[in-house]
Amino acid sequence: MKKTRIAAFLLAALTLIPAVMTSCGGDAPANDTQAVNENTEAVTDAVTEPADSLEARKLVDDGVETKDYNGAPFRIVTSDGQTGYYYVEAETGEVVDDALFRRNSRVEERFNIDMEIVFDEVYWDSSKYINSLVTANDDAIELVAMHAIECGLLGIKNMFYNWYDIPHVNFNQPWWSESTREDLSYDGVAPVAIGDFVLSAMASTYCTFYNKSLAANYDLPDMYQVVRDGKWTIDYIISTTKDIYSDVNGNGQIDSEDLFGYASDTRSNMDAYLWAFDNPIFKRDGDKLVYSYKTEKMNNIVSKLVDTFTTYQGISGGFEASWNYGRDLFMVSRAVFANGTLNHSRSSLADMTDEIGFLPYPKWDEAQKEYHTLVDGSHQALAVPTTVGDPDMVGAVTEVLNAESWKTVVPAYYDVALKVKATRDLESVEMIDLVVNSRKFDFGYIYDGWSGPSFILSGLVQGKNSDFESTYASKEKAILNHYDTVIEFFENYEG
Image (spheres, rainbow, N blue to C red):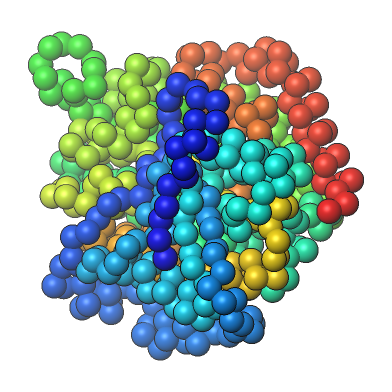
């Protein structure tokens, strides 16, 4: 497999936009080439699935017949510098890199194809590139693996195949997210899908980091047991952290150089509370997905979060700071709890000497039955351009790439890179399992198209504005019109 860059003349043809943030707060994959420590094998045996279970996983039949495609190219477009989730040039000794390389090699050999990453730029440039190819009816790419929201936007412009029309693809297999069937499919149509080939759909999962060393200094209880008991709620966080504060720099002012009980940026980290508090944009009602965002609870959610991050000295929202404010404080041991994504444990927290752990996002209250979390919109989703000349080949290869990822890459990332290298105890493994299993992929979020309500919450908190009703009223018509267009696309889809 090779990575190639698009020719300069094609890049020049794209309309240039000044560079801004390349995601909704997520990181590109860590370039971690450090060899796994000597204890990895022993620890892995203790914390991962039993060896026979992992071996059994490798033996699961993917249901795809092997075929010789005579060296055909299999060209992938991705975005936001995320090539590292799909491709490495050679084995490096790092567990995830090696799993990626071996997976790609197996699939290339099995089908006699040549995999390439042909484009990996900021998501709007990737979108323009795809748009230019599809508009020109140019069969230059086989698979899109890019920013989920931007992928959804292209999907409703009829630029992608319906996954249900692609041969060999079986969404009942464990390597496809159940949300593809339950939350992202409407009337048997799914232009966008999420499978285990998209490793960022795990890496970009929002969680709460927990500094056990600092917590011990403040005589905090066992937070893992608090989670198990269903008591890890927003009110519990407030009561526990509101008075944990230290003027570290001694300037007599509360600022980002001090220590806090709880820290979070007020950007996409804040939007994740919408799903954590069980107030999604769309919910399934029988065979349909229905718009469910506007609830009385939204008023309470907005008021609660604005109050939480503006009232207490021990809780900091970093209103003037950039993305990942909470993570940045946490990594230098100046926050007992902080919001971030799982991949931060590899990219930013691996060298911390403090004992750390992972918790889910909090529930709204104890009456809420389950913990939920969001996967940041910067995570990738899969799509097949309508210009693809051989959908049979694309379906076969994509199905096997997802299957092989489920068998070998996900265990490498999840069970070794996260659980062994980034955690220090078995209870943290339990919590990571809980976080990953609570992920939500919302139809309304994937198909937000930058016109839905996905980011209203963070905007209100950033503005320290509790007036949800007026804000929503000013946007409601445009939002409903947008989703009317989305639903119309699905209901009238003809392929």
